[in-house]
Each structure stands twice: as C-alpha cells, then as structure tokens.
Length: 364
Image (cartoon, rainbow, N blue to C red; front, side):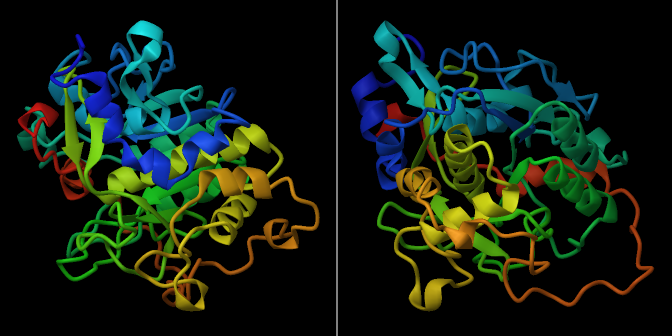
C-alpha cells in the first residue's frame, strides 16, 4: 500500500468501530450521499487519498499559523474527516480508512490550532471568537451536520454566550450539532463546552467491549456513546495510527447522523437526537446514565427505525427540556457574555480533546 506503513487488510481488520455501530448494515440503505458534514477543527488535508473528491472549499477562522500542506495544519481535522467520510483508495478503493458515511461531503472549517503548530506561542496573546463564527458560517453554507471534536474542559471553562447563540442559530437552520463530551474522566469530569450547550448531541467514548473509556467525561449532558479507543485514523503523512478520545466518538456519531439525514432528510435536529437515543445499543439501567448516555449508537437501527410508522417519540413538536439531562440551573439573566475566549484556549482545545496518537500501526 502506497499511503501507509500497513497493508489494507491490517488497516480494515482494525476498524472495529464500523462493526460495533452496524454501519455496513446501514449501507444497504445509504452511504450518506447528498449530505454535508462540517468539520470544525484544525485544517483538513483535502489531498489525502482517503478523502480525495470528498472535501469542499472551506474557511479558515484562525488566519495564522501553519499553512495548507503542512502536517501541523491538518492532523486532527484530517483524522476526524476520515472517520466521518473516508472512502479508502487504491485498487477498487481497497486500501486506507473507510468512514461511516463514505459518500458524504466534508466542509472543513478551521477554528483551532494543532498542538504542534508553530504559532502556538503567538496564540497565547491573541483573542478571537473563531468557534462561534465557524458554527454560523457552516450553518449558512449548507452543513447538514456540524461535528465539534473539540472542547474546553479546563478549570476555567465556562459557557460563552456567543457560542451558545451560534449553536442555537445552527439548530434553527436545521443542522444537527454533535460534540465531544470531554476527556476529563480521570481529572474531575469538568463540564466541557461546546458539549454542554443546549441542543448539542454530546458523545462519550467506549472501548471495543462497550465499556466506558476511563478518560471519557461523565456528565449530565451525555446523549449517546461511540467508539473512542484504539481507533484507526488517517494522517497527512499518509500513514495510519491508532488514537483515542471523545473526539473520535463524536466523529463516529456525526457519520451516523449523515446516514440518517440521507435516508430521512425530513427529521429535525431534535428528532435525530431522540432517534439515536431510542435505537441505541446496550442501554444502561434506567435507560440513561452520565457515562454512556442512552447507550452505544446503532447506525443500522436508527436508519431503519426512522421510517417505521407511529414513532411518536421521534416526532416531537418542540425541543422540550433545555438540556438533555437534569442539567445545571440557567444562568442569571443579564449574565451576558464573558467576552471572547482567547485563541490560546482555541489552540489548547485540540490538546484537550485531541486523539492520543499511540503509535504507527506498523509498530504493532
């Protein structure tokens, strides 16, 4: 295989997440054709063999740092895009990473810096509202799904009025917003934003046995879970790695949402969220908990169940509760925005929820 250190069989054999989510069964109905998934992240390597022809012209809301073509521009974003819409490559597309919705399109929106971006020192003294602007831009440019494999779960994390409003704007335009629940499971389970904003489908991570990953944040906003351990990812260096994180889990769910939207374009964002919960596998006692939400997403069941008549639980008239769980008390009126967060936070976001690249597959 020309694009990586391992043969196609070795790569595909390790894509256990597609089997866990019953993706190939869903492909009998759709592979996501006609759906646009916005990847708000670092850059995306549009020339990667697994993404060639799937990446639309995007937008850079950072404006400095690494340039397109640099590995430091697009590692995390490329990995997420591959999970969502990778199509493999080579003879009859038999090599490389295949994503959940290989016929979907990727709309890249750069809103964070890679950890190794040379501009990180500069970012510490700069300010900006890239995430909120990126969400609005994606909603205005045809995004059916917005994937946010990022978040701030630091000790000083707090809701930003501008980001919250941008999420509500995207939902009102019909875009489903999916985000990483956070990687703070071993460090206090701090609330992570944007996962905690109302209307966002927050995704926790599980391993191949369905157990919640130790690093995965357990919080009231968890909606569903998806694979986030030993995940095969594509890299701009044309090699393949194993990674971990709720970043990957979010991307898998965004791919599943792309399949649902392709098969059932009339469903609203809240209907999609309720459908994912209603059809989830391995539901915990009581139907939900903070560790895995409603359970592990089942792409095939969700695609099939949406067309079943009489599904009142996925045809709500309003959004209902402000939060997906009990949630915190609303902020006092007049609390307002605390000001745009620093670009240092945006730069650090990738570090907080970035896939932990363990080692190249050939080292196994």
